[in-house]
Structures are given as structure tokens and as C-alpha cells.
Image (cartoon, rainbow, N blue to C red; front, side):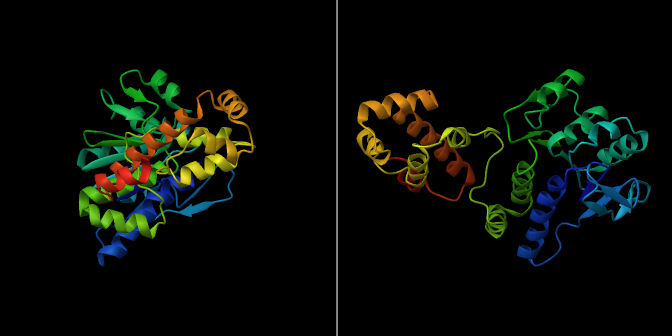
Length: 288
């Protein structure tokens, strides 16, 4: 597995998937994934220079390899290397032989610049989706997906979504059991499917949940299967039912039971996608 590294790369886009594949090797008891970093020069730094990575091979040296999977991270430096002939040639050369070519976050810009994504459906971080679509109109950009598979090309929303992608690839290669063991080793709360939104309903609610609703939202999320009533919610917030309903809707734009319904629906979809629970267990966890 060849990880491209460049000046101005995003560290977690490399470290997250790398750790997932390394952990899979540990769980399997043998080296299924041979991991290699490739860069134009021996050292590559993040934008602020505070984090430096020593590449395993230069781009020229690694051209002799036949990488099964190529992973391109994002970062502030991605737009500069999109016009770098050596990097473009390296990516195209490996893409001809690879089984999978992947990008994390804004790494999709490099795949697009190399002409690899024409006609493909892709995703990237929501902040960069419109720019990606404007620059490369021949591709179809979705700004909501966590990660997207289109033929041999995999693109992700970036940051933590790179780990979600790695777990899915591990599942494809080694089976669900191994992927679940890796997720547990990485202390992940839930595995997420690619079709889940980048910005979740749960996060939206948490963003708005200031006093006096913060404790209520925390309790609702912890006990989604509880038979919540409006009166119980109002009591937790130390408010009358009428005042609670009015102020809650002013804050969230939805009624208390509407928020509860949305949280339950999202948790149901997440648990179902993770594959670790039966339908009956999922229903018990999220439905009153």
C-alpha cells in the first residue's frame, strides 16, 4: 500500500488509515498490508513545519513497485502538487497497475488533476466540494457522503472518514470479523458507512445544545430507547411544559419529539450499517 506524502500534507489523513491497516496486520498475526510512504524528497512537512515525516522511498524509487492500493492524503499543499509533473506521472503510473486508488479529503483534487476521476462520482470535505466541482466539471461531486466507491476509485470526506474508509477496505479484504476487531482496537464508538452524512444530525443538535438543554440532549442520546415524554423532558430542564416546548423549538427549529425522532433514525442507520447488532437489538436500542 503506497501512501503519497508531500509538503503541506494533512497528518491524520495518513496516520488514521495507516494505523487501521497496521492494526489489521496485528489482528491477523501476519503482514497482509505492506505499508510504504512515498515522497518527492526524503522529508515532508506539514504546512506549519511542526510535523515532519521521513518517507520510505522517493517517488522515483517507488515507481518500480506494483502497489495494490494507492492512498493520497489531503492538506494545504495539495493544490501545489496538482501542477507538479513528477507527482502526476507517479500517480498515473501506479494507477495503471493498482487495484485501488484512493484519496482522503482534498486528495481528490490530485486524482482529478491526473484525469483519473472523469465520469466518476466522488466526494471530498464539504468545505472543498464546490471548488472541486468547479475546477473539474467532468466529475460528479457529492458533498454529503463520508466516502464513495466508484469503480476502483475511493474518495473520502477526510479527517476521521479516512479511518472509516480503511475499515471498509479491511472488511473487503479480510472479512467483517477482522474489521470489527480493528475498530474495537482503535476504540471507535461506531463504524460508519459511506452513505452517512459528513455533518450528522447528532452533531447539529450538540452544536445548539446550550443551557438549559445540554443535559437533556446528553441524556436523550444516552437513552434513545427510553419512552421519552415532553413532560419528562421539561422536568429535566426545570421548565413548564409550555415554556419548554416554545424555547426548545426556538433553539432547534424542531419540536422536542421531532429531535428525538431524528436522533433515533440516525442512530438506527448507523447501527444497521455497522453490522454488529441484530434488527431486534437495534430496535431495542433506539425505539421506545
